[in-house]
Image (cartoon, rainbow, N blue to C red; front, side, top):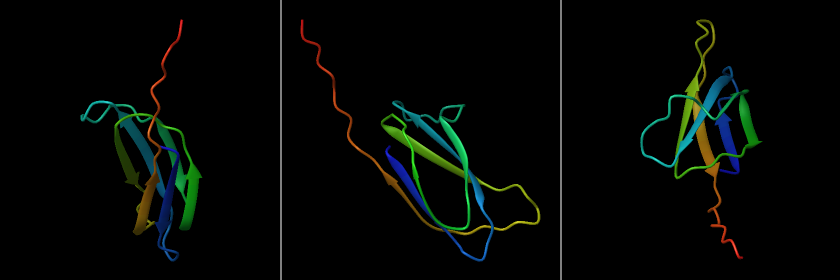
Length: 85
């Protein structure tokens, strides 16, 4: 994954995120990347590898609300390295 673009509602609060990647279709126990998105549109450059991707969005604050409008993951196909002797 090269980037993650997130659009949250402008009138709401932000949200915490965790990104998990794996080459297996089972959710890993530890996130690769953690962070926070603020309200509105955010484009974040991220580097993560794996054939499977999960994004977890949370906000445990009782006084805050958030609403997801759109999320887009920008990915690039990996290249296999070939060693030459």
